[in-house]
Length: 361
Image 1 (cartoon, rainbow, N blue to C red):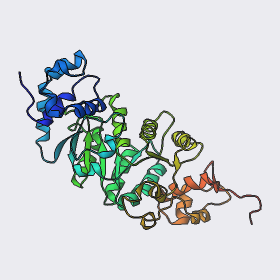
Image 2 (image 1 turned 90 degrees about the vertical axis):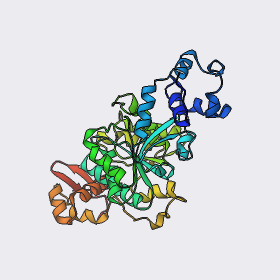
Image 3 (image 1 turned 60 degrees about the horizontal axis):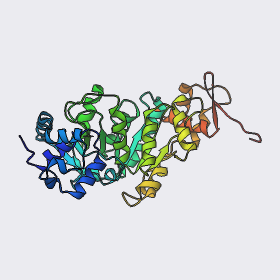
């Protein structure tokens, strides 16, 4: 009967055991070394009969497939016992035993901010993501997200555009990019010094139950999680809950009360998440001691008071505001969202209207 001859193979065997997670594996390895574990009789190990059967007769096709993948350029298998395993991820209640990493594995231990949000976010929410992510990436923090459509993809692209680094955590095998529309983005992430990360073996196709598992890695590797846009049933709320359970900071960007796509953000803020209107709101909380001080980060505020001069007392269309302000439409839209929250403008049929307070001259 074939026996594992390397520690990587031994970890690949352990990863196949049913209902056997990283925390139990770490406990077992604390009692036996990974080498000793395979030298004692399987009957002596504190595992169930079904786990013992897999332990003694693992699926070697899966192991050979994983090893073949790891032989490719810039492909790495990182186990719980490796020095390059993300230190923050090691602390969560259910750390993955193995990570398949394509690209720069040193980023696993870098200070990270998780950025998540709706797949159906508005252009203004995309602009908000870029306004927050770019200066933070420029300051040296790695941006971590899930490679999904919408906010995830915008966050990855914004980090790359800023010349920063980004990690994409996948819910598929390392050889299966999902969604396929992000295949080019995945290649760019690796080419520009980032990495693709997953706990799933090569060949693993998209499966609904794997996405929450992916989310715990996104939040688990990060110092904090920023939720940009999320409805009440959004998977981003799962990530935020996991971050809270992991003892990490949670941040949220508010939006218009009429937008169902920010109901989840408002819920998070009401329940203790930190409201974000500027990159500095995040820098001051999580980046101290990791990258440059907050005061040296580009002071990119979402709203600008000057935009008010372009909004009239009557209904003013977006096109009119763009023409009057001379600012790009994405900038105008992101500023209008926060000005609405601040009560400076209101959404009316045909566009936006300036709100005049009592006593205004």
